[in-house]
Figure 1 (tube, helix red, strand yellow):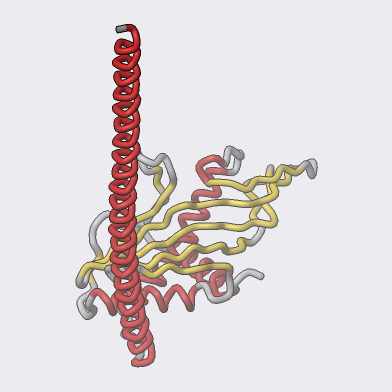
Figure 2 (tube, one colour; figure 1 turned 30 degrees about the vertical axis):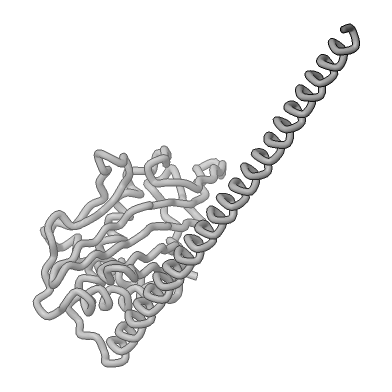
Amino acid sequence: MLNMEIVKRIALALTVLLTSTMAMAQLEVNKETKLYEMHNEELITVDRAGTGELINRFYHWGLEEFKDVKHNVERDDTTFRGVVFHVTIPLVDNHFGVKFTHTKRQLGFDVRFDAEKKDYSYWITNIGYKTVEVDRKDRTEDYDGKLEDFKGAAKRGLIEELDLVFNVMLDSFSMAGERDLTDAQMDEYDSWKDSRKDARDAAAKASQEAAKEAAAVAKNAAKEAAAAEKEEAKEVKAVAKEAAAAIKADEAEAAKKAREAGTEKE
């Protein structure tokens, strides 16, 4: 089911945009990746927020914004300066001109935030589109893939629509970036941060212990191998000594017999 709050905000934003000369952000193809994305060109500054609190504002914004749609979230538990939402939202049917109707639509995307002190950046990337395109003769064609690969005749109209959808979202998280967190939200962040640090420290300690144990096992194995090699060398030497002694005894016996044979002839 479509989040009606999102629909209402899109309708409101469309009204504002139609009566305003304000430029809005647009999807553009990244020259390196060749993929559509939307992001800020300059750092955005929030006067009353430190890094942890700022990124936590976007985390709680996303939890509320996407609570009624399919999503998952990744929080940076190393630097604690980033958060990424992987989102899939439904879109209402759209008539692109009079030739095509797009129905059963879904929009997938990632929205990522990085914060440094009081500045932040955002990226909207990995945009996917799923739809059934119906023409005037009720012929259908399914599409489920990256926005870049969509070759339908309605692509221009689709890009304009997605610009609007993402600008509504941009306006929403921009306001959230300026909004103070509740004490409970700050406590949640502090508790999560401490738990991740504890987990990382425990993992590092376990890794050190494992490395220490592995080194001890390797040292013991090397010691056993050296002892075995020494014992083997000792055995080889003993065998060689026995063989030499046997040869010497054989030679002595042969010499003795030769002398005895010479004495008998005399």
